[in-house]
Image (cartoon, rainbow, N blue to C red):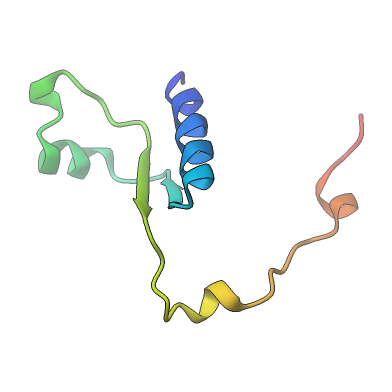
Length: 77
């Protein structure tokens, strides 16, 4: 669970540096273990993070963002 503290910091740092970042959850742990030989190193994957720069030809980057209204997302307790 502590991995997500580091993940948050990495996402923040990437944003500050202008690097695109996407966390990936729900991946097949067994495949990642096998491909990267993590078990042999005593490691267990908990999250994946991609880092990079978007293409100048990425039409999605220029589209307006679509967001739900805050009152549709949050419940004040």
